Image (cartoon, rainbow, N blue to C red; front, top):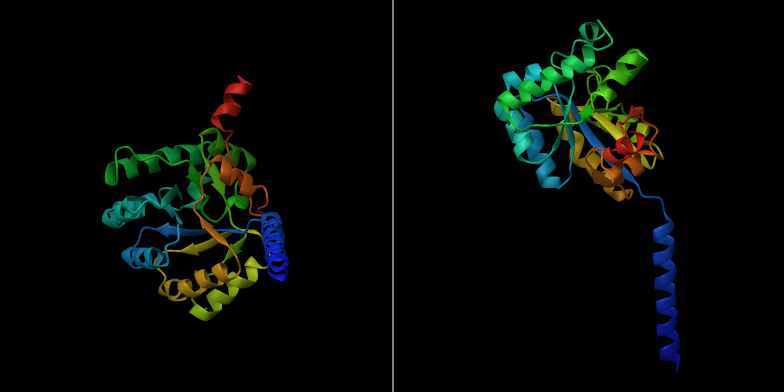
Length: 243
């Protein structure tokens, strides 16, 4: 009889534990890497493959021309690729309200020429972040069918004075207790690659799920709990309803 009672209690405890887990907020981290591709992109890809985590690469068109093989490696490996402009020139992008959307079209042409004729992306990141651009410019890229994303955590790896440990600490500090994180990092920086396995371990130990940015319904729901600045175009069914 005692064994039956103990077994029943164990089942009840398991049920309660599962229910508690189901009520816990879903923690998600999106690793993003800007300004590539670079000559050492394969080294970054090797780390991501070894750690078995997805990531999003925001490419610069001019870099794709310079490192087409590395761009194809990212593409062939199935990582998400977004547009980070053709030349990463903030001043030229601010010339007119529609310059950003025209630049996006130029980026697509480069990717189709050097990577895959069928390449498409609806992911965009403004060079320097969205805050330096007029609302009309931000709206123009959305009207072109793109979602744009900033970030709410960062490595500060463009600061050459910071070592790998400091980059890790910056990422952890800016992550804080946020449930949904879009982390900004950059390609072509050894210190970033050196600390990346430890940072991935930190997110895993703290219950984060790794995902790549997308405009799919599941990610849109996740973004609702994200503090990063972003804007997405309506989903196809929403556009049809508005017609």
